[in-house]
Length: 288
Image (cartoon, rainbow, N blue to C red; front, side, top):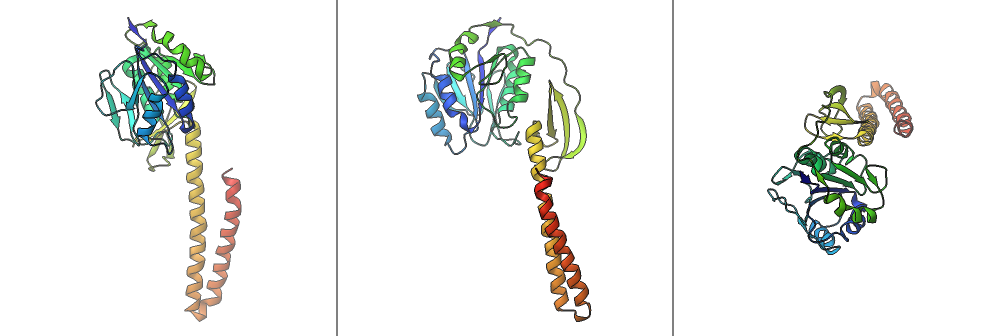
């Protein structure tokens, strides 16, 4: 038997206060290792580690590639890199963004679930679009415990109650190996291009949620995919407006150097400008 000694925590840029409240009551001899991905916005990563450590009694620092997994310590994902867990060490990897984020919550959660199964406690304090949802599902499928600050999960409760409950969960014993989880279905290529790199997108259903990923490794939950694809569509439409106006400008220049065809060029230029104005007026309807 093993303990629930791997605690993975994810939060959005507004989650620093909640993270500090979570760690505040934890004892310095907590028999678990904590790993944090925080979308920290403008907070300097070194300052972030100090703020987390200063909130309680556990040591905290930025993770480095190859770090050992040590109880009673908080490791925080560094800027612009994903943090993943292996059985004996921490990996810090520069890779494609997931749900627009790097570091992203899902790579940490997924890797913890596969490496440690029921030993994992996954906590979402706040999120950014879908980041963390897929990873939480993997933790749950492999026998881990899921805690969410506000929405219903294994333990859905305010952050102060999560912090108070965490030492009790850590003390629980669980099987060393994860239970057999249902095999994920084969991904389906759906004829959609990745908003980030134009690679083909495949979709796979995990639990009740669809997850999208491309051959380069960019990943999106449903809301992140919808938002990204909508933004790409809007950019394409604005590019069409610009092309129409560029063509109108070209035609007017041509008219100035070709008196015999000037009227034809000017008429065509006026038409292109009308089309650009009409398309511009429709863009707001298309993207909302």
